[in-house]
Length: 184
Image (spheres, rainbow, N blue to C red):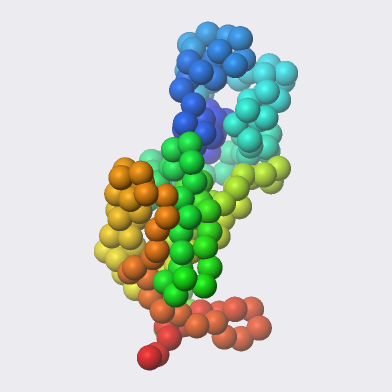
């Protein structure tokens, strides 16, 4: 993504408006809008303040890997958690993850008997960018979309604890933790 896209994404994840960010930096809202639309960059001192205020690294802000089209596609698969985190329990309640955002994606080349979709949560953003944890594996896109929809509905109701309901049961095997569907 471009600097502008990364800035916008980080700002939205912190639930900060362009006006609020501009006020923190002592600049106009139009300057922030200009940066986010890819028509300029802030001075280095402003970059450092942005990095600290949005709790993201300079590397994250300047990263240019994914294309803009991928971001638009990915936004359909992501929930940004406003201000507070949501605690998500896995299916058997053996693990809980406090998430800042939640997204799903398709595994490009799933192994034999491995569910092809995963639900991921970002639990913090550090110096090297977002730290992502796999929350669950899913047999089909419909199931993972339903899970994401219910997480979103919980947040809208002010509920900040959620237990996964539609993920596939998996077990880990081999040295590197290969997953496969668990048989009952």
